[in-house]
Image (cartoon, rainbow, N blue to C red; front, side):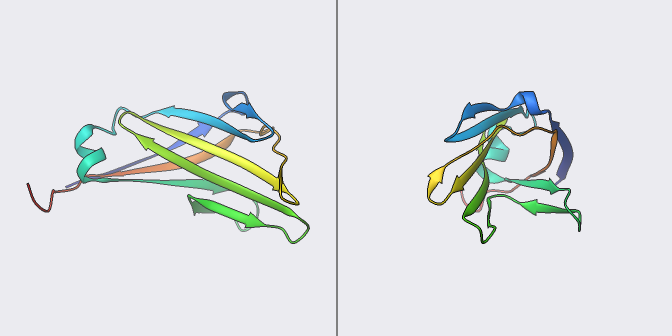
Length: 115
């Protein structure tokens, strides 16, 4: 078994969407059908606010002033689709990321429990 990880930088212009949320896709040929069916893919956002850390997705944060931030992802064979949304006082109010964001992707091989 093996585990493979890499950090992917997602430039601000890679996100597309509107006030309801923004999406960005990463091509990941390492996510084969065997990984998809038997292994695992873990995604972490590099949170650069002190203390700097990798935050596992999905992630949601409420700031106490009516703003909720959501980061999530969908895993596909060959790709990862990232999702970002902000909700202010119950209404979608998302602005496109203005800076490059980084994500760590960890791909883990698996062995089927039964055939």
